[in-house]
Length: 135
Ligand code: HEC
Image (cartoon, rainbow, N blue to C red; front, top):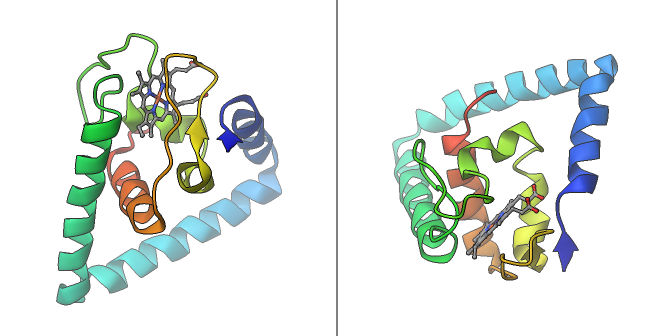
C-alpha cells in the first residue's frame, strides 16, 4: 500500500527548485518527444497504443469516475476530488504507477483503496498522460 500526496508534492517542488534537475528534465522530455515521433510513425504500435488509451479511460471511468472528472474537461462529481487532468501539476504521472500497482489510497477517507494488475496500470498511466493540462 502506498500513500500518495504530501511526499510526492514535496518531491515535485524540490525537482523544480533545482536548476540542474530542470536541465536534466528538459533533456529527458526532449528525448521522450523524439521517441514519441519515432513510435507514432510505426503504424502497428500506434494502433495498439490507441486501444490502450481507451482501456485506461474505461478503467478510470468504471473505478474513479463517480468522484473524479476523468476527461479533458468537466468537473469532478465529488467536490474534493481533483480532476485527473491536473494531477500532473502536482507530481509526475509516473509517480502514480507504483501506487496504482501496489494499492492506491489518498489522505481522504471517502476514497477507497484501489489496486490494478500491471497491464492495467500501463494503460491508466498512458491515458492520464494523454489528458494532462499545463497550469
Ligand atoms: C468515492 C470517491 C472517490 C473515488 C471512487 C476515487 N477517488 Fe481519488 N480522491 C477522492 C477525494 C475526495 C480526493 C481528495 C483527497 C484529498 O484532497 O485529501 C481524491 C484524491 C485523489 C488523488 C490525489 C491525491 C493527492 O493527495 O493529491 C489521486 C491521484 C486519486 N484520487 C486517484 C484516484 C484513482 C486513480 C481512482 C480510481 C482508481 C480514484 N481516485 C477514485 C475521492 C475518490
